[in-house]
Image 1 (cartoon, helix red, strand yellow):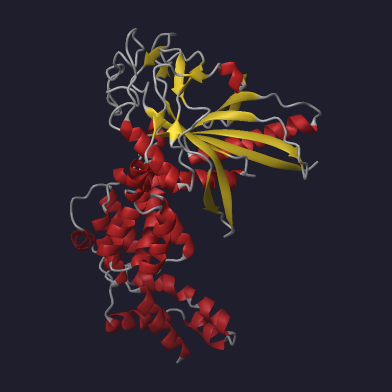
Image 2 (cartoon, helix red, strand yellow; image 1 turned 90 degrees about the vertical axis):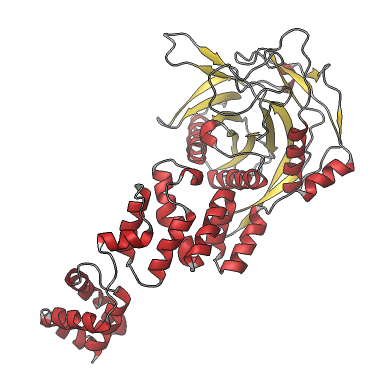
Length: 483
């Protein structure tokens, strides 16, 4: 049987305010447990919450960036639920009147097609603390430093039909919030967390199937894996004649396993009611206009500029523009590297591969944009070959305090571009390969002749100890063979 996959996302975006949403406690990451939770966060009797104005400003900026309606009057409710790491026993959130109404985000897929994903709404709420289950001799510790940290929860319509679309949307949203500066986007620290709602229905049917929610996915890779895993799990159950249980599930990316966490609650299970400690928040037009005027360049506009200013193709410009930090790194590299396209190739290739392999962010890179730009300059002016450039990059990455030119000299990587010297090497190599020369000259097909040139390049590079200019070698080689 064929199935349609229906996917909706709920994304928790941790706002980069310096203090919590209803108290003056710091939101800085990495402090000792329970050192950043005050009486309001701990729900001590007699304490009252005070809304953080910056959280509202960030929420409005987000709404404007995703083409959404901004609610002039928003209300906070209490969501009653047993949170082991939120002392109040309820979460202060928004339900009936969220600050951000319907909006949309356009995503681009690998086949070049674009798709619009609708946003149902986004609301402000407080985060819970964190339960710690390790190194406590069978007990659980609770760290309340994060309790009360401001979040925007973004809820999409079920517009996505596969993992590619869901991941593309998540990456686009990540690019938007980091470009706005309202979130640092560090998923390893919980700054963005994804809940994925998935259901299956018979192909072409208008009736939605029973959905499950997979919670707290903190990387694009785990999110993609979790979707594939859950789709396969539901398909196996349905095709065996079973029924899907509406539930919340947890996914372990390291083992590619999921398990049931709890049966899924409905809104009435949470007994929402208006928070008696917080008045409705009314935003005037001046506040919204101020937020609108403070919007920075967003990924779509940055992509268009990269294509126009640097001559990048649509794909490369899209990848670089999606992440504000990577975009800034590219511009620094391009300005010092004198070759924007080559800079883009190195950043999307060698540089990104090393970041991913070591699970580093751009900000943690041991190589700066200025250093990479200097390396690109030496590749572009034929001072070093591509192979030599990789050796220089490795030295920079490993923390060699020298500059690019010093490393090139110290390692003897400067490329030989003296045509007279290269011609001598070509003559010697051709003299030692008479059979290959005869075979090349007897071949009449131009395509095959071009392919056969590669057979001479290995010996030439060996003769030059890897320092011969490949482009010049190729030109001299072809000229001599054709003669």
